[in-house]
Amino acid sequence: MSFVRLIFCVAGVYSMFLWWAIVQERLSVPFQSIDGESSDKFRSALFLGTCQSFLSSLSALIYILLRKKKSETLIQALGFHDKNSEEATTAAISNGKTHTHTHHTNGVMKAKSNTRFSSKALLLGYAQCATFITFAAPFGFAALSYISYPAMVLGKSCKLVPVMIMNVLLYRRKFAPHKYLVVLMVTIGITVFMGFGSDNQKPGSKKAASSSTNAASTPYASLIGAVYLLINLVLDGAINSSQDEMFSRYKISGQQMMLWINLMCTCISFILMALPLPSIPVLLPSGNGKSELVAAWTFIQQHPLVISPLIEFSITGALGQLFIFETLQHFGSLTLVTITLTRKMFTMLLSVVVYNHQLTPGQRLGAAIVFAGISVEAFVKRNDIHAKRVLQEREKAKLKSL
Image (cartoon, rainbow, N blue to C red; front, side, top):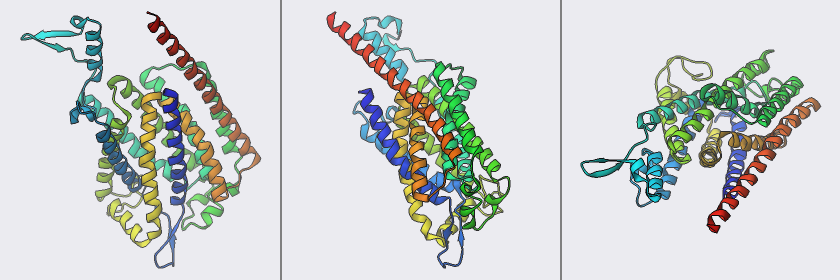
């Protein structure tokens, strides 16, 4: 059953996010104005994030309500109850040992609550992840103005590194030796890819020529893009490690986490967009006394061709997140990263075909090293799943023999 679930998650992540990636790249290039006299890029990453997070929270809520059990209250369905305590009490009753897990109050037997569970702490955890996501997305979107999409895709393949580092630094987790080999291979591969990039591959040439700005044609374009991408990766690492900790502590479902994190993302980003804040590079590029929301809406009115990719971006991102959080809940962040990394390989190939990117021999070598490392992780994970399945079958056979 776990293997079937894994295949289902992989298929969902691949289908939704391959489409999402193509649309994202389309959103990074200029759109022609309605009068046909000029063209400009859509720069409001916060508006993009708000549209996607709103649809994601809505789809998660619909999923939760459809899957809600009749015996559950709405509060329980939304994830604000102590599932750890419930499981402990149920196990104790079934073993005839309720006295070790319960206490009496006025003659009524009640289960002891898990002292680790706290609705306030859970909400703070959601808020922490939402804040990281809100600030991470604009840096990833801004990087596309300075580096090519294949370079960004491969750079995102280094996500294994910050995820492992943040897990070690924040939660003192340890990993199997092969994972460090994978991280080393991915790091070497991305270094080779970035080092052997040609000028024709960068947005500063063909891609920037069609743009109304010359930011990507500066000598430091690749460096600026790499810095933005690094910030995005570090924040992503903090997000994934925090989500792992919340899953293990509170026993919430992936869709419950998806609902609350995206709802908070929508609130945070909408407030930032609605306020007439000064211009902030990357986060609020329109600024200067007018709200980001007004600037984004004005752009849409003047460039209606952006509407279709905006809708596609939001819908595919929302549906894709259902599969992302399902994977995260049942298989953990490192398995999720492995799935998304292999998806990035196909994203890169699709981007090269659709948008005619040219890769140098050195870049092909770097990509090969990265995906060789990913293959090691996938192979070991497959063996682990098989070994666990064999162990479970043996345990079942022993129970039947008893």
